[in-house]
Amino acid sequence: MTSADRARHRQRLLDLRDELVRDGDIEIEPGRTDAAAVGTDEDAQPLTEMSQTIASSRNKSRTVVMRLVTKALARLEADAESFGLCVECEEPISPKRIELMPYAELCVECQQARDAPRGVTRRSLTDFR
Image 1 (cartoon, rainbow, N blue to C red):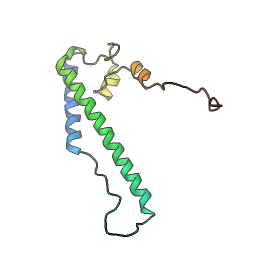
Image 2 (cartoon, one colour):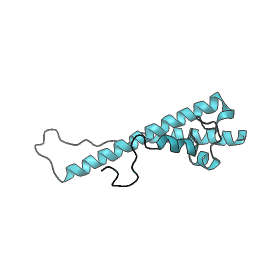
Image 3 (cartoon, helix red, strand yellow):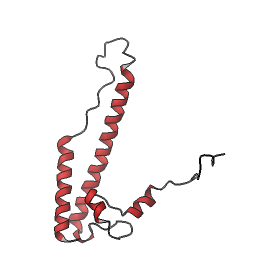
Image 4 (cartoon, rainbow, N blue to C red):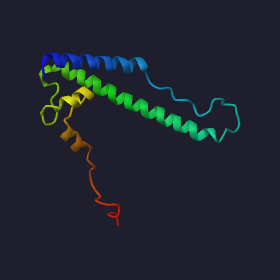
């Protein structure tokens, strides 16, 4: 990876970090808007819970991405030459992967190994019998 590539990725990481900070977390609506009200609209409750779950999930994902962006910027500042190398096997991460996710720290193979299910694996739906 050339120094121009690293500078471009650094700028993309900074832009992504700024966007995450600027947009902030998604507000989670309270389950009840009036604490004094007795009874609730039972039809609205599932929708409210679903909205809360979606907002919470998005906020959690944004937090994870922000942490990865911060780590990538730190790696880039600490050792620019190793940026773009997998932190586990030290092989180059594919340019397409880095382009899509400049905060990626693992190559595809190491990421697949990390994401693989651990423990009991089933080959078919009837393996649990």
